[in-house]
Length: 528
Image 1 (cartoon, rainbow, N blue to C red):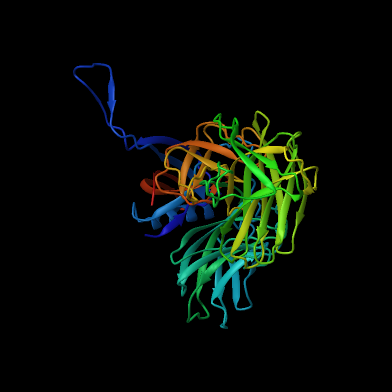
Image 2: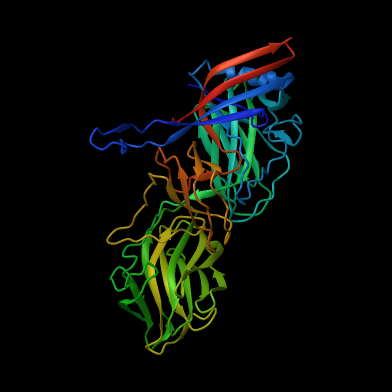
């Protein structure tokens, strides 16, 4: 099956939405009249009935797309037309992303590539041969992004001649993944999606095209009718590389000039599982830590922990890599709920963090930093401080802080707290109509509101409750229908131009003298 696109710029005059119930079977018992009995509920799918009056290129492109579906055989991508009520920043960042102005703002990937525009799509063609195996286009001017914020790049490509697959990249140099970009590739054509965290502010370039392992020839081409770059948030499955997250007295937690009294305080969840981390009466640093394995590639890591002041009102979180023993460190004021100072060692970069209230004087404290060397293990550390920036001092043997549910994840943003016991966890994919999300604009209510539509893993969902975020950019997203397929941790949640896969039926064309047409058709949402 091929995947097609109904361009976002072809807007119908009207769109009737019908909710299809695939999973409920309602019957009434003879012995309990009036009480409906329901079998397994599978959720509602969208059916769209559209009508257009189209002319010129709109007519040609719409009819070509509908005919190319071959009835219900090929799936078509399209957005659902609605007015976003929430305040999530869903602005399109790519200028001329649907090529209304031809090739303006776009460049060919290499000297052996040319680009040309027709009918609001760009044909990318090889005009020569060299050792390059990829052919594509990219935005000529870099796009300024907000550092350490999640974005999603998308591109649609149609098969032409001579290519065995497609690719999509996002980075601070054209066709690269530099500074945190994420690439996507496929052996089939259609809509590619790549979520990434902007490791720098600007400039960013997105590029898409075709690749082949060998035999690229002049005249090979493909067609690109759509590009997109927008802000997004990310799914948060609840990964935790630490063990005994709530048991700082356990031997898994190594203590340096510190002791632990377990179950000493009421934790944020109301249980009596908050531990007391107490400094010893010696000079130096006072902390508890775990050693965890990691892969050698450069990556962002985040340690998040619930902390509460006791006789000490300052604490810090630290990440150490165990090759060069350099550290990234951030201090927290547990009296005022303010961030303190930070420091970063030679093999770390991009240290940042957050602090958010959990109620009852508890704070969700988080530090994120990028490990830049090839270290294959690191320390996740929770420590006491006598003041901002002061981790080494003479302890008095009685002062301390309360600690609970330390969570370490391979993540570029703060994550929600996850309990572990004897083993670490990679988290679990949500299966119903709710999920944790991260990377949201911080401390904002109403980012999404009921009836707002978003896309996750190719599925369209409708928000059923307000999506709010805390100071760490964390939120809980509720929606219908429930998820059909498993998602992956860090999958982008797409809010600007969410697209679903649909099958087309009931196409009717009233062709008026060949220059104008009145077109109607039905679209039924599918999951593949």
